[in-house]
Image 1 (cartoon, rainbow, N blue to C red):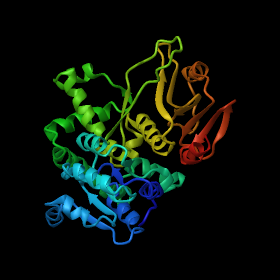
Image 2 (cartoon, rainbow, N blue to C red):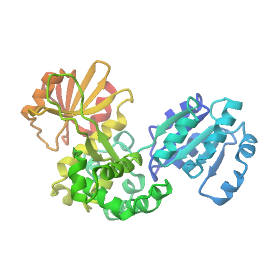
Image 3 (spheres, rainbow, N blue to C red):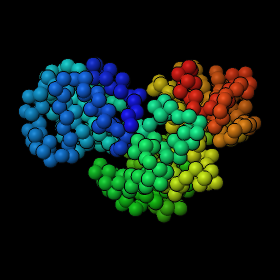
Image 4 (cartoon, rainbow, N blue to C red):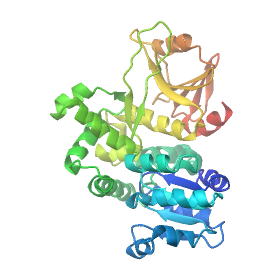
Length: 386
């Protein structure tokens, strides 16, 4: 089953403007497939998989080999395996600065991002390929719940049954911990990082408190901060900052932490079905994180996302800012959402231009002036209109 990826047009456009384009993200999101589709528009494009010994052998003298194909689009998959290539790419690009020379694919890693940005500054455009979002799946109301349960990784969403989807996600977690993270040069035992990841799953959507988590985990606060940085850098976690504004209020300053993919969250918590999810204490926080991830993926990159909370109880789950514009999103797992007093206080404090309450409802409706309840399935329309 072929699902059109929203990012394809952006990659194709970047290839007409930049000598190098990087497509980054976790494994199994479809980077290779997307790159092959984009490369098909370039005659005689060359694909090299840097995990394949025969392709690696061609790059023994990388400058010589790559210079011989200067008129082709060269796709380098798993580029993090050969970070020394960045220096060669810079030299080749500076010799012939034409767009669409290199398409680099890599699983996220701090080292890869740092080296690519430093070596190819001004020569490269970065894109992140996340798991499927609702604009790509276009789920019905009934399909949306399954999408929330399974998450957006292609092989999880397209699995024949919930059981096989769950098994795939368990395998993905193990592979990420035992193979992917060590391949980035990160030396943390997989069992330790898994236990930390599971602890964060239970704290999904809550405020980050390194000292409290370190005490429960039996390590120092800097150590748990390091673990958090690892999982965030490899696209497994999202850190949502608190809104910092001069409003004369005592604001909460700690960020919230979410497991980015809802299917991975449910696998970490051993939730394999919608019935199990419905009865689990995490259900509301899981829904909040899933909606947040959809907003983060679908909203234009110029918008800055944060949450708002004061010591007096004013709270807004997501605040999107762009220049002087502020849009609020409150996320409720209810067929008849009823906002709290803190919600209305936040609207007053922030002077929001518009606020949306995102809920699992079939049809949207206005709740007050500039406040609308909207179905999660209509987030695409909402975000395109703001």
